[in-house]
Length: 405
Image (tube, rainbow, N blue to C red; front, side):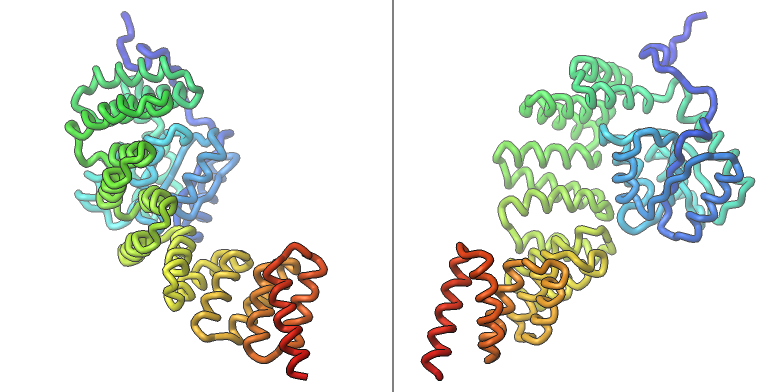
């Protein structure tokens, strides 16, 4: 009897069993829970278990480790929960879609329906026991590697696109569209192929069709916004990127898409407004406070800049850019002594940092410590004779000092 399955149609090889020699990814914000799961997987003979504390971190892990064979992710986490993570995996050609278990506590009908709608393979209820994991992983493996699961075909299309085999990628996405003519996902895939081929107008046509099929499909708005901005239709592009944020308000990647475009045009007020709303939504991601601090710094709202720079430094204590910005913000806020302390920290970390040394000399001169200022400026001029501002300030202070004496 012939095999008319999707897998057979595209000659996709279906693995028989979960390979315990391949790495498993655990995505959970509570460290003790991650350690418990790792311990259980070790007892089940899994050789390598990789950990991530949230979905955003998991995205970075997956980009660097395409051999991950299974994912267990918590539903609710700061910096991207499990459902947003799964959606990113489906769309990003560099992220492997593998069997995916979603962990949740306080299970409800609404949560289970959400899991089904997003294509989760299996659900694990917390707190979990050793006896829970093996059957759930086996079930997720069987569901994902079903011969009629279209997700495997999407993975094939992603592979072709990743390898720049655009003809085959387009063929596969077209067949997926034939199989599901009312879906948005294959049309977004076809749009990605067009973008890769520099066919922006055709990509926008596909996205328009995708919007008719599903106006709530987040990635069509994200991709459309990026295409329009790249084409120069900035206003309409930003409208699409903002709409993607509205549809997925807890996904930090959508904020990053918008901020990247706003940054190119130095629209610091809009960055501050957008990310202030992210903070109010409870969104957290490592670059959030860097973006906010830079926005308020450029807007010369130094009080807010100081607050956000200090938060950014909590995660990156010796970041020279943050420290220099903090010192300037403190100086502009009238906190000269604190500013000098920060410059001392910069110089201790980077003894030849020109900005810190020069600005520290200016602060010394403004507070009457002219001799100390001259020492720093003399050092700068000797080591960097083309540093005109230092030379000019040195000459100015030297002349004033001689006149005073």
